[in-house]
Image (cartoon, rainbow, N blue to C red; front, side, top):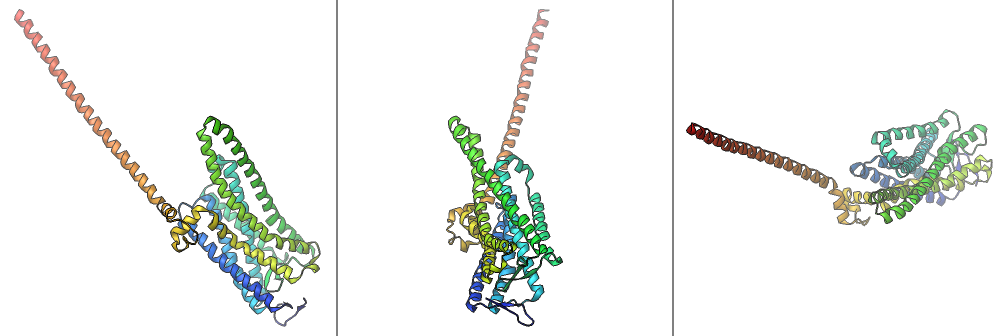
Length: 394
């Protein structure tokens, strides 16, 4: 495979046409799936009040970054694959690569935040209740986007660059040039965007596993033998949080697996062996990395029961596809109304009790008055009789 220059255009790579078309078809499927799936996640989580919790705000942010990754990367990549070269010019290449970097970094940092949130909820539940709220979750997400933006902008200012890669139908940051500036940016990018978040995720789940193991031993020792119902309730709450943590862990593992080949290619070039990398070895890992945008909606559609019920409620045509029973869908959709009914019934019972108390108090007051009056009659009658007797004797 040799590169050949074309006047007025980016260089191309001499590979068979079907290689471009195959990669283009794959990236088109990835783009359509990622766009529709992540849009569905955003729509359902925004419509459903039962899903609007601080922890789920992070999931929505992950869906937003994956959705933007899909709509900015796949159509451009597909169009270039049909033309077998980059056709959008230098500025288009820089903007395309910048969007890929920004949304990819945002997804990775969001996954780290999700893992840390699960860590605090399971290992320090009392502290997490006081710390996390919707407002604080939004502030954290603003920090995530600013952090991602800080690592995506340097190539615009001369620290590394955004250039075509692989089959010359997509663009990324320059990890192939063996210069101190490019190598420094590559190493720092991997440390602060990939390795440190990965270490934080591993740390979180190690302690989550330990907390679940200790809780399991405690419930077997004290809960079963001594019938400690409070301990059993706490353990059940922890198990429910652990279910969400397992779903997040699956999403994280798939994301890391998707980006690992691309990371390996960049590290090979960083080590000075870029000459052993072929265009296919650069392009295929890039496609796999961009496919990470489809994992989140698929995993939640398969494993998250409330999300599946919400889809069946707000998008009924997908309920049968996800095999959601009508009973689950009705119970999910009737949750707010039943809660309002419960509140209303409680308020009516309270008002009834208050009326009853007022009635009883009024009855007791009238009874007291009647007793006093009868006491007065008897008392004054006896006094009148005694006074008449005394006058007669005189």
